[in-house]
Image (tube, rainbow, N blue to C red; front, side):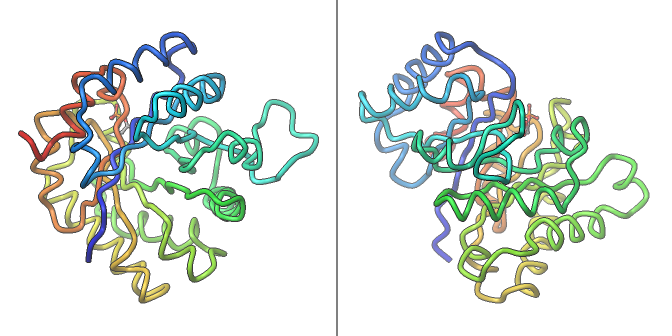
Amino acid sequence: MGRIPLISGNWKMNLNHFEAIQLLQKLSYELRSHNFDSVEVSVHPPFTNIRSIQTVIDADRMLFKLGAQNCHFEPSGAFTGEVSPAMLKKLDVDFVIVGHSERRGLFGEANEMVAAKASAVFSHGMVPIVCVGESLEERENGQAEVVVEAQIRESLAGLKRDEMSNVVVAYEPIWAIGTGATASPSDAQEMCSHIRSTLASMHAPAAEKVRIQYGGSVNASNVNELMSMPDVDGALVGGASLEAASFARIVGYEDA
Ligand code: PEP
């Protein structure tokens, strides 16, 4: 197995670049270097803050990985308002979230576009965090597994074999995002296990290597139980990542 957990803070459309630097510095103060021994930690500021955060990570030799929340799939061109994977790579970005449910729901991103973005992120030397997850209605109708499996198959279509093993998947049930309603550890485990079986059927060696994060109202009180599930390899954290002390407690869940 040997999958190193990845805990990612998705800052969404919050914080100007001064506030973002402050949050990173507070977070760094709260954490100890041993916190990074067994866990990888990425922060995903808005585009306008990436350069500032990169500079601070670099200057203070912080151990955070740098992340983005989205990108276009083309390397450059007439795409007003978009940011390319090549631009992110130039800023030393390591991970790019693609297909977040807010992108899918509010900005009309379908699996095909998510797949194009995931491939583009890899081809620029970064790692995509591909988000999937069912709505409340889909769960109540017993369709959650079918929906998530289709998202996995279609959003990862086109990845090369080595990319299939290195991708990160974030299982984020839409009804749990920003609502305080976390999936129970056993429900999270059940879906993450189903995702792993789906990955195995697509490319067998990928199944044991791919890190599957759970996301949806993760906080310092529920992270431990979620992380104890065998197929949960990390967390994608929204709200609780905006407060240094709470994100630090999530990152340091093993110390609790
Ligand atoms: C997210 O934005 O991916 C997320 C899981 O948000 P929250 O932790 O606030 O539910």
